[in-house]
Image (cartoon, rainbow, N blue to C red):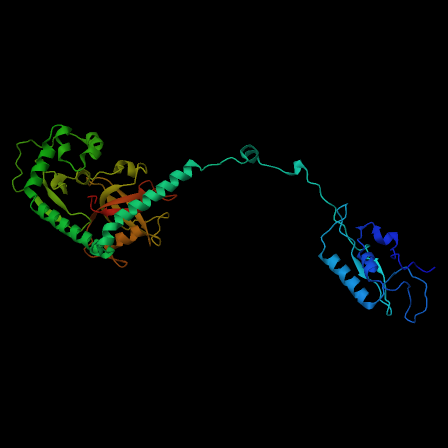
Length: 412
């Protein structure tokens, strides 16, 4: 059957509307405007059977229709009523002068559909604070306001402190200048102390006479160095006057100033009314002369009676030390150096050992040894030591030297 030239050829129903949605038909409108012949013919001009394809009059019409269709498909963002994209079409074939054009649907077998996810109210989760304070002004934590204010104040104060130095570069003093100034002040102060001690023999003798003749402890305390600290110890050991207030020692006292240690001090020595020998120590405090009670009596954290029994607090012990050669299995000569430590009153003694190579042994060696050889004129020294408990298997009166406070009995 020949088609009606006044009737536009129709696409099959499955090509106009299908699963992918509706397809607009611009070819239909173009055919009505541009067609000039009423018959479908093949290239030879003979009549042919109409295939299930769309027939256009000329190559120009084909190009126009195909171009218009392509532009519409590529540029359009329209969707069908169901929300699916418009079916994409492509040119299948072109034949002869009066080209046969078939517009087929794209193969949809390889197209993967992504299911649309429905978002419910339950999917929107808010933290408790967010739920309660949504849209509210959260404000600023007072703690951070205070910290920030403190930082600002510190910066302002620092700037004010540095301002004089910035305005006056000559005011900036180097560390070396500060150290040099401190050393100069120390030397001048030390020289002043030594001078006052050197001129203090008469006062030192009077202080000592008042000390040994005082009948009560309250008369003693004002004469002592650091009296508030030593008062409990003085009251515990006070035994009363040793001489009468009318006793005159005459020329029996001698006085000297020691400047070798960390602190210069005066030493007054002699014999009492009962011919008991003594040594007393004096220091300058607040530009005045005082008796150093701890050094004068040889006070220690434990008595020598306790130390002989291996008990007591050995943290600070005053005594007179000298080298010895007494060793034992616990203190072998290959590992230790042996010493005698004699009590301040000269009655009791204990053995002390310094482990070779320790700081205590090195300090002792400087006093008594020239290398490993005992000095020919090795005299006893007054020292203040820290002792440790003896090693396992040692006798009670054998102690290990744990620390070296200082030579002599005056604390710095």
